[in-house]
Length: 518
Image 1 (spheres, rainbow, N blue to C red):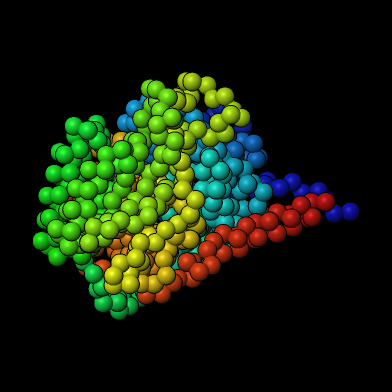
Image 2 (cartoon, rainbow, N blue to C red):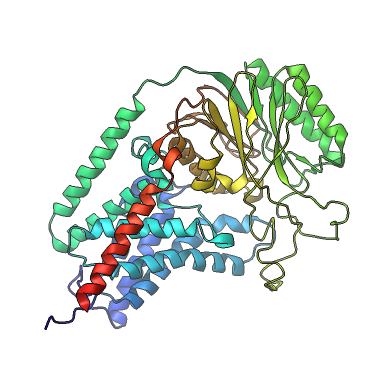
């Protein structure tokens, strides 16, 4: 009879876990991981730390059962996510209770991953690949869990300035970069335990191959510039009214910056998200903008909405404003106006209440808000030179699958309208922009980020930052010559094939493990 075998009992460290004297150093190791992960993201942005940030945690859970590994991972994940998202308290209405819930929820994904690792034989050479596959599956789940979906600080985004490594995203998407970073972490931990350098050597060869290919890809001849575009950054403070007394002041700032861009040769101007509130109620405001487009002789893409984000309800306004949207509109050079694109992916608990009518959310958790109506599809804005523009708004850039389907037929470009002034001078906006670098590479398309308070950037189709407005809450323009997309990438055509391959490998491995212990 084949002896029974318990999964997850092959330790990287030849010590069993148990007791305070053993638990304390493992907890400290988990917290070291959280500190290293935090430092890998902006504002610090020490991206090199991400390649070994998880080594302390991996060594800490060695020899643990699934339950202990889960709680150790929860500690590391909670601490890391709470630190990364400390800027959430800049938003009016957010309290420590909200931060704890957010950190605990996001920390669950790290906790589950640690539990899964105990199901794989850790001494096998396949262990790093399986562990990395399990990690990106957690990332994918975090981005695809209905109203709980949140894809902000993924491991891959620590490398948003590491262009050679990022080039694999045109095949494997953002998850391919996360896979590589985690693979190096696990190989390093395995080598430290086994006191053998073979795992690190294997990881080094894989990294070198990816890096060399990325350098080659970056040095390929780029298409000739097609047009000059400008992202306008007005740096409007969060409490400047959208209509009424403050509107004229706002339009004056936007007009001055737009004129400067036109004088610099810009052939397309992009204004940020929600520059004009209640635009249907005040048609004279839109008339001023169309007159501006005619005078300047260039098209505008502008962000318009019926209300601000994070504005809490003070009265029942549903009777006067039944259709509230966060939208983008193209105003042509002759003053014509396109049909609007309405933001599809609304922010839960700030632009809509999830499961309203089914769940009576407690008031301490969810305040009443002025809800928006979601859009129900994509829209392309055509320009006279055959270039097509596809707008995305706010946090829609965080969701790779959504953006992939928005990409227009070549020649085209993506336009990201955003207003992160709610987060003050925190690193939130830089973290937010990191996702747009991946969206450009994944789809082989230039991407214009027009941000109210910055940083506004123009990103080439291979992730290069062509130009940017430096600093937050600094008025300015980002202007550059760009080449529209000329062909689609593997990722743009086929989507998350890499994720599905990894999911299949994990499933087959776990099934085989279960068969072996029967």
